[in-house]
Length: 353
Image (cartoon, rainbow, N blue to C red; front, side, top):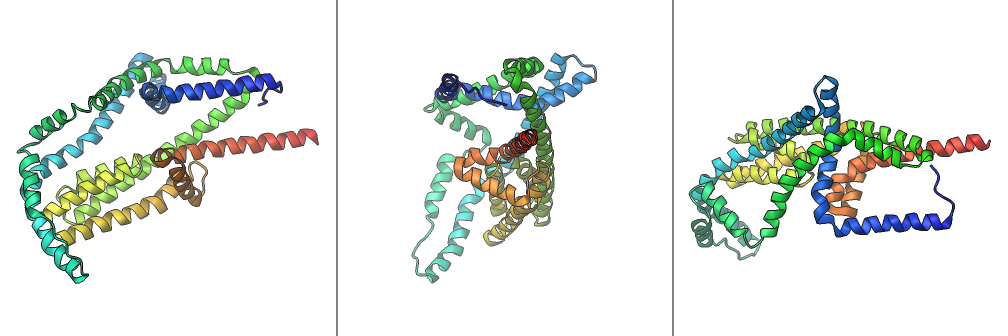
């Protein structure tokens, strides 16, 4: 792959790239659902191709794959509903009692360290009386009414919920034609190396996805079984949700941890609840972060386990939460790019010799 040697052409290309980047930043809110749909189309295009290979018309294959994906997302979200439905009445009834227990346990311990601090149980009772309704429906209605001030947030969520599936359908429908047109838009000298690079990226990303799904399934089983052995009533929905939500680093784990801690505090004594949830989720984080992800994901994308840990930390430091999401896929593509760069370099050395 060679860049043009004419300085004017190089300047024009650089200006065009900067203009596209500036336009993308300016239109980030508008482009967001389309970028999400494009990422999902890349992930689901293989499933559509397999169904089409079995003889299904492409529109029907696209519809089936998209419906299956939506059902999986809804099933994952539905795992939280029984937890909330079970815990909401307990939370309303037991929160003041729990506050008294925590105050009775924490205050003497703080006094032993010379800290004069008490939990205001009456404020907790007032909060329960004013904000926690008798059922989830009333609470949801109150939450929706409170969001009227932030209507733009609600409109953004609704807009994404409508635009992403629609854009995903049309992108999947036209995906083969889009790939052909993108290839034809490349200069002739670039087509072969870019095609090889994208083929290798597809293979690496497929390995990454298979490894990530294996980690999610294993951790869902781990959390469900260990919480069940600890005596938690809602061990299986909370454990399965936590494992499957690991596809969103930190956030999915944090939500699962919060649900498990809430359920344990409402069911057990505070000390046992903290020990149970802290032990299970601490051990699970160590197993997932230092054993399963480096082995099952790192090896599939050609990264050493230490490189996987470094990539997660480095991308998280540079880009925050988005960096953690992109760390392993981006690292996989960088590995492929490095292999192609070294291969082209060695080929040029051999030609020169």
